[in-house]
Amino acid sequence: DVKVTQSSRYLVKRTGEKVFLECVQDMDHENMFWYRQDPGLGLRLIYFSYDVKMKEKGDIPEGYSVSREKKERFSLILESASTNQTSMYLCASSLQGPRNQPQHFGDGTRLSIL
Amino acid sequence: AQSVTQLGSHVSVSEGALVLLRCNYSSSVPPYLFWYVQYPNQGLQLLLKYTSAATLVKGINGFEAEFKKSETSFHLTKPSAHMSDAAEYFCAVSSNRDDKIIFGKGTRLHILP
Image (cartoon, rainbow over all chains, first blue to last red):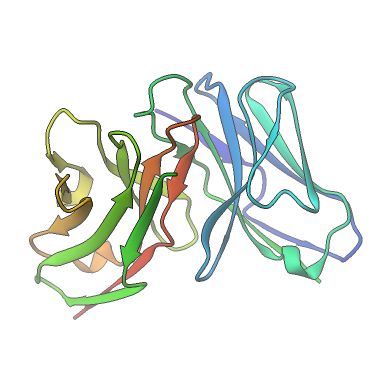
């Protein structure tokens, strides 16, 4: 069965800290995605990656960066955390190719920046 | 550009009653459509997907959705609601330019005893 694992379910950090959120998938998927989810705003795409060492900005990349050194792992980095980055972060992966490929999600990381 | 609109950010139904969650899409090409469910403190789980093979799509947990091109709709239904159906539901459409999926803002389903 498909498995996307996010390293932390809950995380509390302080403003100004560098924060790493890790995501690993075991399905050999080419595509990986990072979203943030906020009440009333739905899912917003931060960054996505179609291949190792490849990244593209999503709709809200400001304040974030990503790293994809291996196919199975996609990291989201908050360079200097701010309180407005308190949110639920969701990682997803999918196969490349036909447009009927669904995304598979991890359980999310609820991040609080104090 | 592709988009989806979910009507109603909150829907309440009584246990045993019909569940109807509305989704309308906009697409410049034949769409691929999805419904996802999110239970509290969990990620999104695929309920069902429409890929043009049949207009009525059956998913998990007794849910189904009907693709209506003339109405640009893909509404989600379940004949009889159960307390365990309380969750947030997201309608989504595949991008026509890349491998992204565009999500609606979600509808939170409340089940009344």
